[in-house]
Length: 302
Image 1 (cartoon, rainbow, N blue to C red):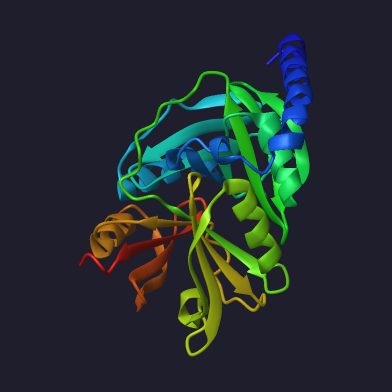
Image 2 (image 1 turned 180 degrees about the horizontal axis):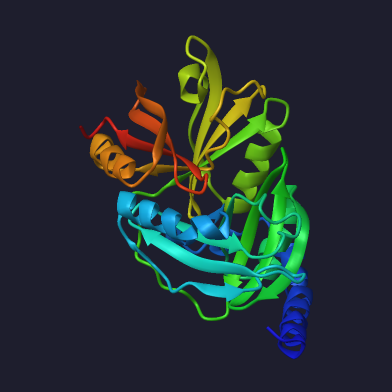
């Protein structure tokens, strides 16, 4: 994007920010319309350029779906270059980046992106809820982005598109898997619930520790749902065995064993074999390129 176009976008963003800020002063707590829908929650995956094709083949081969055309673009506010494409499956979406240049900080640390109806209002609502804006709004080739950090150090992208996208709803909504220190979990929960206008589905202070690799122990687990999608929050002491804490997203499937069989045939490594805990059977896998994910099936319907 040339300098003239970037400056135009910045002018639009700043003008919108000023007008949105006035509205936010009186209505920031009433933000249910900020979220669009769960199918616009995209997990951000960064792999080496040489691993992009292998990752695409294995991810789509495991879950189904399709990819947008790969492009080379600048998706950061400072100079950089990356391949970029969107992998859309019935159980989750990935924004895939294969950077051809060094990755400008703090990019690479944001776990996912949420589509919002209005960037200035979303930024104001996030700040009012207790988030820090670590990357202020900037134009990208198809809209405006920002990155916020929630209490506990959880980074997320907020984005808005010039042309409103239209994606099919998921057959199963994926979950953001968030690990927050025991001392900050309450602050994170409060802030995110205020921003997302979500609700707590369950709050179990004695969930099985095997869910985070600690059999025989207990863990505080909170499940949240909002228009943005699903989230599971674990209060962590930081003593996590590999690969727990590295999986940003959990994908629900209809048949776990069949899904894992397809994944293995495509070069996906099973890091944690399937185990039963509560209402689900779960496994953790690593895709070519290093992306780690949880996959599970509900036992309530089986």
